[in-house]
Amino acid sequence: MNYKILLTSLFFLATPVLAADQVAPHPITQCATQIPFGQPSVKPGDTLVCRSAYLLSFNPTTKTPDWVSWTLTPDHAIGCVPRVNAFAADVSLGSASPKPTDYAGSGYDQGHLANNADMSWDEGIARESFLMSNMSPQLPSVNRGTWKNLESAERAWVYSTQHAWTMYAGDIGGTKTIGADKVVVPDFLFKIVIDDVTKKSYAFLFPHKDGLSADFAPYQVTVADIEKATGSTFPVPDAKTVKNPLVPVDLKTISGDKKNQCKG
Image (tube, rainbow, N blue to C red; front, side):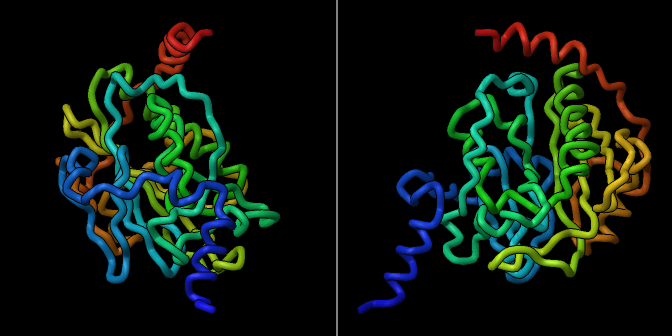
């Protein structure tokens, strides 16, 4: 018996979405629109994966992305595709991909880095956001609190400014692991968001612990701070040592327009 084939078959059967249901990654060159200011640095051993609406650098040691990058445009800031929770191992990574079962009973959410709401303008793209290569273990209070509040603000900024914005998100550090695949729980989460028109960037660094403020503003840092903490380079069009004043967040307008656009 060919045990390698058997093990590969069992891996695919253990995932909620079979290989036939997943679209193969695109050539990296097709993700140029997700990194308009250049590609962040890639650590040795990482695998770059280009999806239809995001690019990520997957770390096979931590089983999480070192970073994910995507650009959200005003016409995609409001999406009406319902959330499907189609969490699935990333077949393109083979046995290196974590699985939803790694998170079961761990106390951690399967936390999106490129968030589903930014991808909800297309059904296939929304489903790709649920691939486990785009996840990191996140405490519920963080994932559903401060982190989610920043995600909502990003879409509001895109919608109110009518500018495309580019995002970088990722994990930092961690020694605790969960699941059979030993997915590393991060010590920190980071986000860099860039207004592609004004060329201003805004960086945030969140300690991964309970009790964070619901307001993300206290966690604003500089891009240079993120680079120092991650050991990675993130291309931005402005000075990396400056904390730009935050753009006002208008959630009321985007929420009302989404309700009207998506009704029925």
